[in-house]
Image (tube, rainbow, N blue to C red; front, side):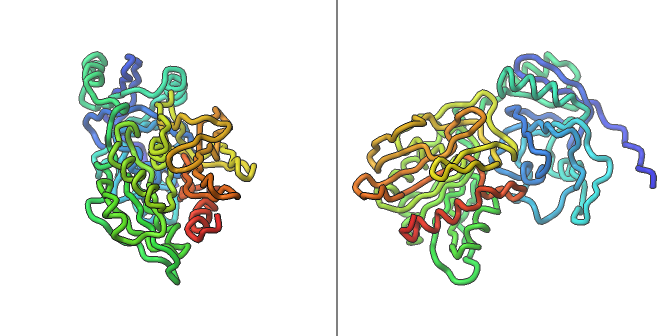
Length: 383
């Protein structure tokens, strides 16, 4: 069967804040958008990427050349909407082909008002971002003059200093019940939580109370939790101070803690470490990380532009215990996990921990799913 002829698309313009310009065709909604240009190296899982709230205010460049092949379905979304500010692909699929597909990627982008561009040399664009770093970008199907679009790019907001978690958080608390017999209760602070996170906890007998980003220690204690969880999320951890105070209060109260991605950065700040912006970040589903507690190497999913500034060797004495780096990225030695242990315990009992990557990655890989078991062991007092 012959494929349908591609529809005539409107020309589109992409301009980076350093003036580098790419021309292509409209993909998704028409109009204009601005954000931080970042690239993702995953060859699959684009639906999970698009609906990950951590990508709020970011324009995602896909390094895989063909995107949209499997269409979009109603089961694999990580939240209720697409969060990316814009989308950049080389060759979008003309016809999706998958038995679970109910609509095309282009249709979803258009219906949700996400401006994108296709026909771009994404390899050249990615190499430019690797060399120069993540930067602001604008995409427009209405502006043809690169200089005028560049002027608006330079007027747009930067990611550094941005407090965004409250914009993507739930407005009201909700509960994800335990599957089978309930073993634990966890208060999960939604900083941009993905739907697979409470699902993976519930499968382990955890009743998950998902709370807004603005929650206080009193809100947390009201659910009588066995553990506290901080999710992934967007923005600069240095600009997110309220959640750091909440976490410090919880640590003083002796509540076991587990954090993912943004939750790792906030854990680092709660322990007294700094955070900094990476040149171009880690995004994709193929990042090698070593768990230094076991010596095993995991292939992991990432989406972060900031990292914790903590010493890779030795331990650091904090108000809450001895902190060490538990995981490290094998590509660039970026801190990928932290542990907090009790110095008064002869065995160095684990009190809290976090990882920078995504063990809940629905699209895979699933090498790090054991971390949810480590969390249950922590709450049992067996970690």
